[in-house]
Length: 402
Image 1: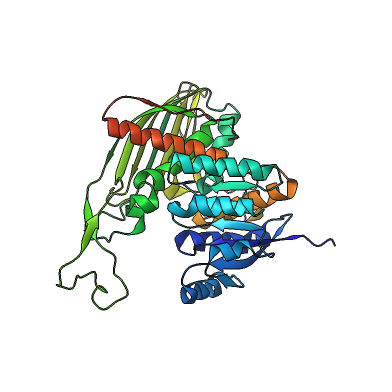
Image 2: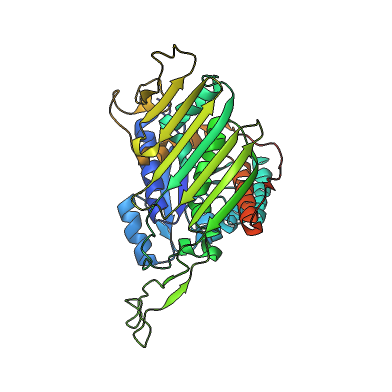
């Protein structure tokens, strides 16, 4: 039996996304036949004790405290960037220049200029056989991939309406601390970039079309928050030396709402908020076409609703498709029909697709160019919201895969 070549993986960052990506690297070759075997070579983080504990827990065999040292290691062939957005461009560009493949979390960058620089670096690296991908994991939910397939097959006809929303409530409490996701210099934007980017990518992926213009508003409901606790006696509870709670400004949006127009003529509405009390991770997408409709709700992530408008009206209606059949995208590697998958599986599917593309020498999707296109949409939303009214065009970049 021919041994499968290994791919040494070095990951930068080990919090929420780092844990999800670690699970994906651990499980990919255990369930799927992949042409490259991931070797979880090194985990990188600034705190030596914390990164060592994380590596032991998540399954990495060594650690580094400097990502530049990670790039110099011969046992690393791919760098997985799971850090806050303000470091994506620097790490990813340096990794590509060092000849390492790159998987980078979304959104691709904190600005259009950074994203363009990343695309330029990716294009130069591609000429040397070095590949890159941005991590929009919801594309790899089987029901979402099935929705894309049905649209491609013409099962709902011409796409006319798109409704997308991503609702959370984790910062409803005004005393929730001022974490990095609420600081523009680190996160780039708030609900817009953090969760709005997902529904922009999902809507464009499923429809196979691109947004061309938007009209938007954004809102910040809580403008100041307590500073996070620090590791010293005076500030361990977020208190100043005088005993008062120190607070800082929230510099990102709490909610973003916008209208959109697709190149193919479809109209769209998007809503991203972290202030929808009672909604934990509610992602919803409905697409209405000339002959049918599709609807997806992540809180029932193994299901897709499909309406066939060509059926006899007396018996027609939305049907519930349980997306657990081996003929459905990604599902044949897992459990028997009816045995459900979860959030973490989308990351495994992402890694599997990436490994297969790397081995075949083909360009992974979504590419950095696709990530830039989403960034251009987010930037147009910000420009529209700042203007207070009117439509903002989305610039057209070079041809990109979807």
